[in-house]
Amino acid sequence: MGVVDTPASQAANRAGAFPRLRYMGSKYRLIPHLAAVFTELAGRTALDAFSGSGVVSYLFKALGYRVTANDFLTFPSVIAQATVVNQDTTLAPGDVERICGPAADYAPPRDDNCYIKRYHFLEGLSVYWRGQQVMENTQTRKLAKRYTPFSYTRTATNALRRTFRQFSESAIVLSYSSNAVPDAAAIEALLREVKDDVDVRLVDHTYTFGTHASAHRRAASEYLFIAR
Image (cartoon, rainbow, N blue to C red; front, side, top):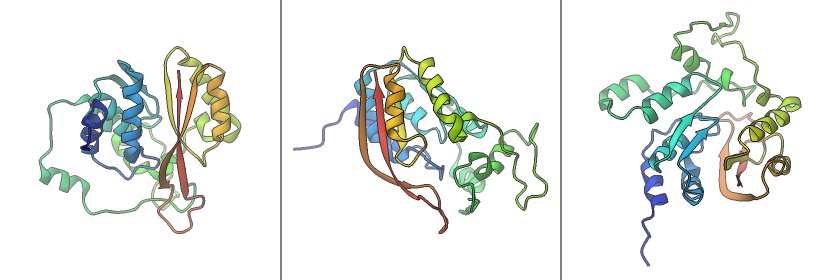
């Protein structure tokens, strides 16, 4: 039997050409699974609430959704503007090579899950450092960490609860790491507060949270929560 060419596979193949960024927690390799879920839901509009690398927003676009991308940081919005909103402008290979330059790792040895510290240079560059508090006493001139309730164990659960309630009238799809806080059981319970039908799928997928040898809890699998 040959491979069946479906709308989901077509969109996944198109999203597979999306520029692959070394973005912590990127869903790039989960695209085939997500494409199948989004096709199954057969929606027309979508909110990518934590857009990050932008690959999921681009997948929505490839599937014909009207998508809104959102992120806590500014530079992911610049990525989304360039790759999802933009329809016409492309860069020549020489431009890409000059911008990207040689591969380098700015990953800090501590606070490995802090996006502000990991991506402080890109975040500052995206706004030309306007309105940013630069920590002059640090070796790499980090940006001061901004508050978000999703970053702290004591506040993350209620932040997720408020988010799920905000979108209780919509289908909710959450791709979630097995080593995240709160755990998968808590996420399922939160979703069941607003949805009667919650499907939990364990995806055969492993990624790492750190590139340096001292990173702890590096290996993690992935859950897909589909709440309708």
